[in-house]
Length: 296
Image (cartoon, rainbow, N blue to C red):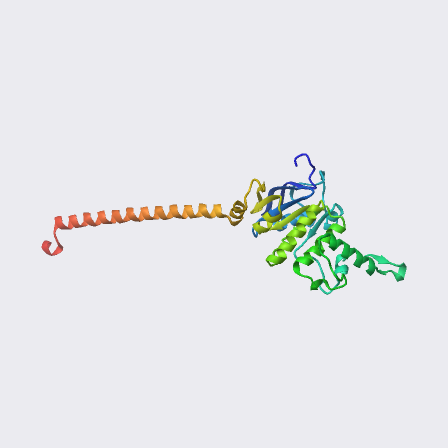
């Protein structure tokens, strides 16, 4: 893979918001026909990195390259023009509009001229049905409201739409987060199909089980920094879960608390011993000098 040019690459990307460090020295690559999983817990910096990749934010430091060439995006449109499409959790769909209408939302095909120009519904229906079929979904009626589809099927519409409009890199923001087990499995199959069609897929998730099911490589973010990038040969599912859950940090904290408890116990024992010695000395003085009554 080292001889191939990545479809997308970021090198030592940092992002500051005033004095807040959102990202620091983050590096990542994604190649064609590959699923790169970006994992991290809440607050790890995933959302900030997504916004940089999709052109919403500019990086404060670092390089951003597309197919080996440096880029400087000023808007999400610039990213789309370079073949980088982002599918957010809300999917940017209107539930009461048809599948075909949502498929072409913002880029509607038309027919006719001048005041007679209108939405080409026949072309839209044919195209939406054909593109969905390529994703493995046989929709009976492209004119049905997209809100009647399941969560997984709506994800497939968003993915098929991005591919149709020329995406080379597909960034998926937590596509399985709000789905049940069955629908999450449907989305994972669509991700695998997008990879089979030659796309580079960046799958953002905090679920290591979903990531391991379809991922080829895994980049883990922690507190805005790259914790590491691994292949399946280098990282087992159990090790990934451990990294994601912060088990190593919990073990270190447990060891630290145990050490503090041991020190507290030792200090308490020392003070008890010192107190006992002081009492013994006081008794000896009392016995030697006699009681106050005897002195009187």
